[in-house]
Length: 358
Image (cartoon, rainbow, N blue to C red; front, side, top):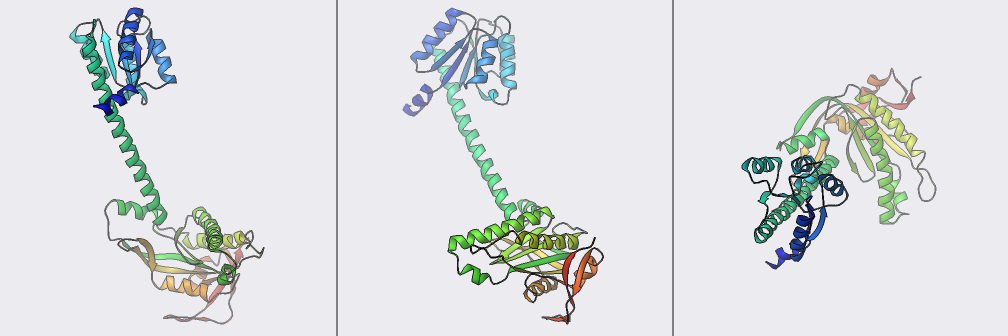
């Protein structure tokens, strides 16, 4: 086979033999067949040179001074990188015990000196073909592993880690109830005006910068980003794993978001302003979709948090009464004058989160 012959000619072989005559004979024989040959006279040299350059096959003598072929073979096969290199023992030791010992140590084959050149070439060709196939298999396996890691990274970018693990385990219907979480909505004020002065790439870059800043804060406070909708950002504390400090962590993030906005400017050099709304209570959460999956939340708590944002004031963090009651001992609040009407809930008192106590 022409393709196979071309592959063989590119192989680099290492000859390890203390006899100058044997080294020369093996080198001449193998170079005639197109192999690249490096020859060394003892085990020490073999161990040193294999650390410096790669080889595709090793022809190894057994009886050598200082370090025997058995020891060299054992060292090669114990090394995670070199263990895949096939080793053919070429030795004058003609007994079953030596053959069995070498095979157990990992030798690919065993030839007795004086060797038959035709048989040696056939054994080398077979070993190299097997190595070529094994290398291809390892390469395919490594690519599959990388694809799997890439898929897992993508899955973790879409879903919380516990949800991603449940999906990987074959759980297709994921729907959970959480008795108490804290939901935050944030929205850039007058974003349409900002966007009208930006090209599409500039607009995407601007939003990506702002939301990446918020993503870092989400990770810092141990919260879960749910989604972005246009210029709105949604995050939750207390799921998918319960957290007693969910409200406190969300409040800390909201304050940090305003601090971060102080460092962000539009292309015109203007500051940007946001409204943030927060509410605490029960939610249902689950995975929806059959092609484009998403992890989402439902319930009055989500609706109230959204209303806290949409009915809020630029530059303010408006929270519901439920959130206020949980946080009033640790944070400073201002009661909003009057009450706001929430669809399906009627009028309710609200508060502005002003800062941390102490």
